Amino acid sequence: MKYLLYITTFVLITTAISCVKQFLPETGTDPDLYVVEGLITDQPGSQGVRVSRSIPIGKSSDLVPINGCNVWITNDLGINYLLTGASGGMYFTSNDFRAVVGRKYSINIQVKRYDAPARKTVIDLIQSLPEEMLSVPPIDSLYYEKVQLTAENGFPSEGEGCQVFLNTSDPANKSRFFRWDYSETWKIQAPTYQRSVNKVCWVTNNSDEINTKAVTGLSENRIEALKVKFISNQSVRLSARYRIQVNQYSLNENEFNYWSDLEKITQQSGNFYDITPASVNGNLFIVGNPDRQVLGYFSVSAKSSKVMYIDDYFKKLADPYRDCTKDSVLRVQDAPFPPPGLLEYAGENYWIVEVQSGYIITTDNKGCIDCTVWGTNVKPDFWKEEYETLKTNNQDQ
Image (cartoon, rainbow, N blue to C red):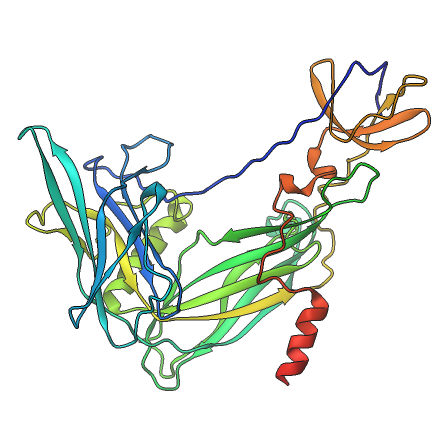
């Protein structure tokens, strides 16, 4: 523990930080390719499509969003659904939009661009091949098992991790190709100190992995013990309460091949956001210019979801608050109590944890007194506490 001689200045600082992780394709061909990301399902509510331009290899910035496009979805009955533009190259359907199983849908995107050789503005029309929405069965079960982590198995520290699995089946034998993603939320409970600002927060994260499977070679249309998510003891996800929602999609064979090829590549290169090779063909093209490639895939899929909460004790989990109170400052006699917030001394920042009669306990980790460093203090609408989950389960029975 180190002791600073005296306090020079108290400064109250409020900081808000937000990060958005975006799809970052890198290709070895034309650095100005169009990129389209979109998924429509049979679930009600607004659904989005992102339109961007790719960037040259070696650039670490985000994609260049394309705003001001005309975007609409067409079904096989000739009905058009106009999408409304938003910032960041995003376009959204109306809230009452809902795709129908058995119908076919395609995306249409008009993009204005300046043709330098011709010295004029032209319009590119991007379209997708019609995609039929296939039915998808429900997820039969979602469950987890504890995993013993040892140095012999390559883990940095011993303890217990968690592996999430699912089982699914389709007795009607209508779905043969599947894809899964998930959204996870975990509760943060920061220590309670005199100067704590926010003690309870939530963090939500969407999967950036590709998980597909085909059952064409199986005699029975059943998938058991599919690995969905592994959580190590280095994560704080399991320290309080953890929620995962797994989404299951039905695919046709062409889309399955697209995602399966990407899955194989990302297993070698990192994750879905690291690379989207130009060699992986999607279902998009430019009308009148079929040789110019469009990256991405316009997905049309029925969707089923299942939610699981984890309230369990796992051995030797990481503790981000272990060293919160390692520093202290001698208090100037008769000086007023410092306000909550930041203490700046000798060019370094400290946050006040406790105020005692003769000294002030500080930390160099703002997260020790304010959990919004890691997440939000606004409870998500979907979040249920343990007693609420038990009540709901009892009512279902």
